[in-house]
Image (cartoon, rainbow, N blue to C red; front, top):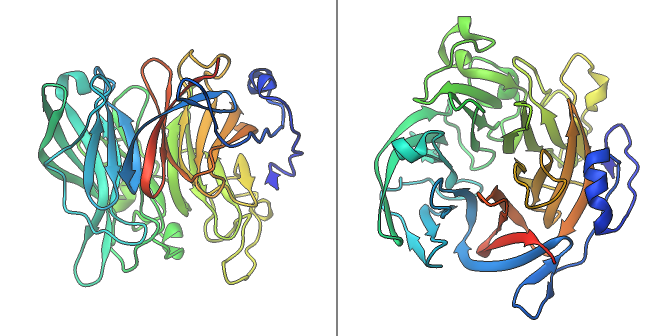
Length: 391
């Protein structure tokens, strides 16, 4: 069941999606798995799909400004580049040593807002600590490329750390997004499967942090006067954030995994408490009940929750014109749901419009400069797919 205070799911044709994305209709469209075409592409719902290589447990994809090349992190610690002009795939030296295992390893890749002049790149990964501990970090370096098939990262330096480091290899988060004005960086710092730290603001676990581009706490954060790690925090009470982006109006949204049920799409507000582990629309894996979100109206409420889960891998707001009527809507990569979930937003509210079944776990989604959509499949041999409108 997809719930927004008990949403009703309806099914309609792909052509109706363009109307639905503007009208906010509470509908769901489940499309068939890919069908081969004579041109070598596949069709999934409204998408014509072409394949551009396979990767080893890819985690994130980002489109390089200027070139349109796609940088792809692989969990075990490798950074690859798909060069769009030549069609070649290269490996980028200068990447960090990662603590690989479980959900940990190489994480996000993001280009600085001023990348075309600064060549600055931001990476996140799981870093080993003392003893059997580890935590997420963000590093910044510079990219240099020669020709169309060779790039390297220089001077990569850690600028932010999740603290404290803990045992276990789950719930790092470490998704990176920049504010629309290009002045600030937001980092998802998930709860590391420890739950209670998400309500303890003396650490930055279970939070979204708001930072300057050098990794220091940004001025104007809601708890800035408290100093220390607390001064980084923008919002808290988060479980496991794997998707974050800003909508067309400049509002921040996140996608996070619930426990057994209760995946969440949240409109993120400064200083807000999103309730984990006090409340959730899911329950603990062992069956223990958790009070639902709406039992605590004093806490921030999700725009949508999903049970059964979609298991989000990533999300983005579409900014292009190639897909008619989609500008300003969100696309969510679904791991468990094995496809893309299309969501329309209106202020702080959101409605699922459609689902597109790719028959594989989808880990990441990114937009090309021309409005095409890049999608990464999860796991060994996960493919990079380019989506354009089906003719």
